[in-house]
Image 1 (cartoon, rainbow, N blue to C red):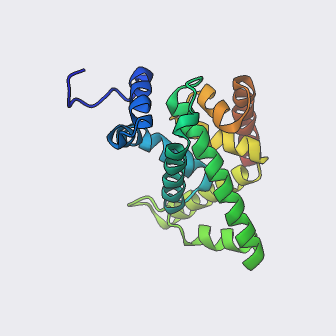
Image 2: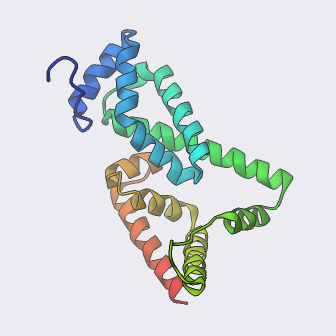
Length: 197
């Protein structure tokens, strides 16, 4: 790679070199790591918290925490996997805080209902009947996903991004790869079954 050329985002060897430089105080090296993995981190956060603004906060917190803990990165997993694990943990903390706040100040059901009612899912150019049918289907899918056990729901939402390998999802969710595959498959089956009813 020539100087000045961007590093291949899929090359873990380059990540190791950047981590080593960042540990020595090279902030530019850490900035490169952030740019390289920013999209994947944001998508993982978004899968967990569901809001783009909250995902931005989670991603920022995750990168800050990674920078603070950089010396603890042992290289047993790829830097991306380590980073995604930190992100997922931060997202779970964020989700728990948000849930506690909602329970304290308002009913979770009424909040979700009003949030979903305010969203527009209209497809341009559809008839009113088409638009109503489309919105109703989206709500049924969302309800079916919401009814899933949390572990299955998290695995399904991560798989739906098409961004992560099962190994990366396993690292984020602290489960074996085979378990993650089963959770995704079972979640899809349950959603289809609920939609069929």
